Length: 145
Image 1 (cartoon, rainbow, N blue to C red):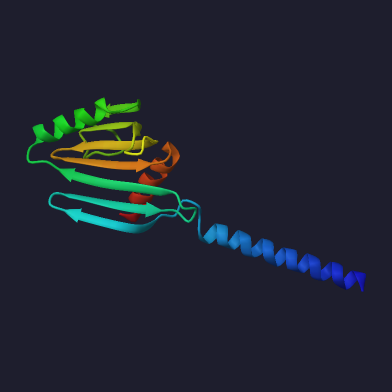
Image 2 (spheres, rainbow, N blue to C red):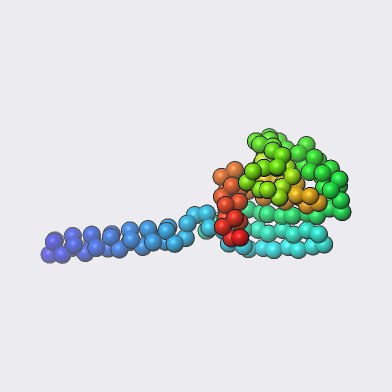
């Protein structure tokens, strides 16, 4: 009787462990699901959430001229609490003229990490709770293309 109970306990534990491993493999922690879309005249914004509830927002704002976009980009750079990286013509994004990675205060006063890119007349931005999630989101976007 004790042997049957032991075998059934081991079998249940193996089954549960297998199910957990399958779920973690099939739904990795950094799989993003689009939950909100906003589209306007010359701009858009998307919100993605992981299965853990971590939200990442990507957006793009278009400007009438490259000078206006440059001015807005420099204004964003001035608002940075911390600049982690600033690069002209970043290697991993050939269409970008300049890129800033830094921490910014959002409207609630919470620090968020943003990757901001100037691309001719457009400013592209990814905002996440941490640098890890911002960079993982960038990889996710590249895989989707």
